[in-house]
Amino acid sequence: KAGVTQTPRYLIKTRGQQVTLSCSPISGHRSVSWYQQTPGQGLQFLFEYFSETQRNKGNFPGRFSGRQFSNSRSEMNVSTLELGDSALYLCASSLTRTSGGAAETQYFGPGTRLLVL
Amino acid sequence: QKEVEQNSGPLSVPEGAIASLNCTYSDRGSQSFFWYRQYSGKSPELIMFIYSNGDKEDGRFTAQLNKASQYVSLLIRDSQPSDSATYLCAVNQADNNAGNMLTFGGGTRLMVKP
Image: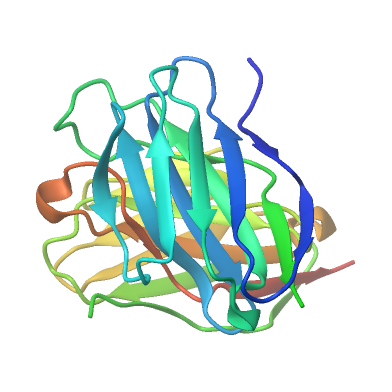
């Protein structure tokens, strides 16, 4: 099975711009989560999508948003980019058989490295 | 604020020794615990998950969970230089364990010396 794929792998933007990152989960996986990793803050949870609905949300400002499509692919968008948004953005997918099922193991994609100048 | 704490290291062990990595968490209601390994410049790779108190073994790896004391540990037996990486402890913090919302510790850097 192919793993989680993320595009693009690298991105350079300037302050004030917006960016859209894409994630394709492992085939059959229905939950997609997004994380931000920075040297200072480590790995932080952004949000999780399941069945095209946001199921869990971390403590990030509203500039960070996401969505999930019917084929489970997900996108996240960051508007009005700030220098501090420079980070590795990781997507992770898990099977999640039922809507209220217990947490299942998540598998991470290679990430998108975003640099904001 | 639900927290997950790890010693940042580096933890240095000789090749062939047992490496012991520890993690504590603040939310007593947490039910799902994960260990990931991350090589420099790469994404996290799942090593093990554990849900129940006690030990869980998988090859050279043993995860230990003690919910009463709120700690999780990972033992790596017969450590190899290829085990040198940052080890991340993660705890699912989703309310009622519904879905995935992992809180990660800061990671422990392990160095295995030949």
